[in-house]
Image 1 (cartoon, helix red, strand yellow):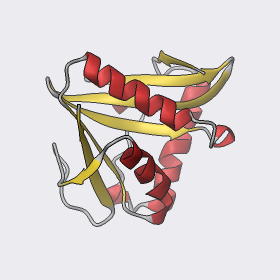
Image 2 (tube, rainbow, N blue to C red):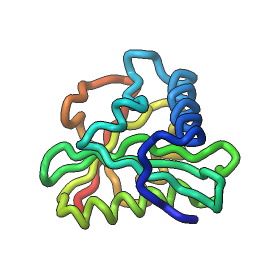
Image 3 (cartoon, rainbow, N blue to C red):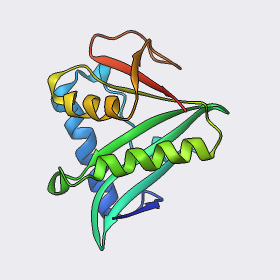
Image 4 (spheres, helix red, strand yellow):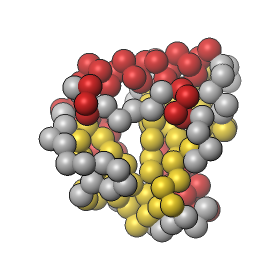
Length: 151
């Protein structure tokens, strides 16, 4: 498994982001979807990485700088053909390490409250994230849960 910074121009990456956005629409009402599209992921405050096994794209994840001490985990996605291979665990650890390297003292995330998001929430809990109130520009939403981790 190789994790590398990505410019979001490859057809495999574009397809995976499309899969990610489609997956969100299956489980969340439109007003509760906070996933970012390709153009939003290219903003300067966001770093985006992909996970590869040779020439096969396994997954992705992003880190958004909220301020000099606070980052937000974004766009965590494992390709459907690579589920349960440790991709999400590897990306999450990579992003936590990167957040620490940048000197962030806190890493936060938003995820869905529905059953479909339970595996993701359990993974975040295993990595020490705990539930918190909305942060940054988020508002209370029954379809969203917010988590944070002190670094």
